[in-house]
Length: 108
Image 1 (cartoon, rainbow, N blue to C red):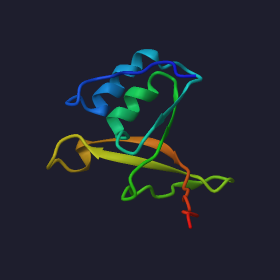
Image 2: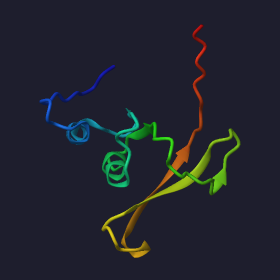
Image 3: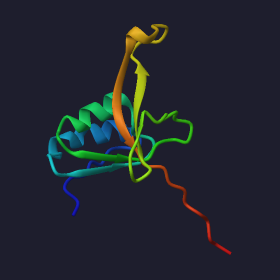
């Protein structure tokens, strides 16, 4: 079931549109997002609603295992600089569960 949607002009970015959906997120919901969305600030805004998030991330993300779980997934921390040029003191972070997968192309 689709609970909410946002439509904008060609010049309205997907991240901006997604932030408007916060109004509809509630505990017990699952928000699926593609790889252009995740970021610490975005993640915190969406997860503050109590909804669960499942986001695909870009290949270059360094999600180092801090604790490996029984199913092979692991806990990691994502960091982002709040201000350019400010070292570690100027960072925000969020803890995530990482599920690694690979899609095989079986086309002839």
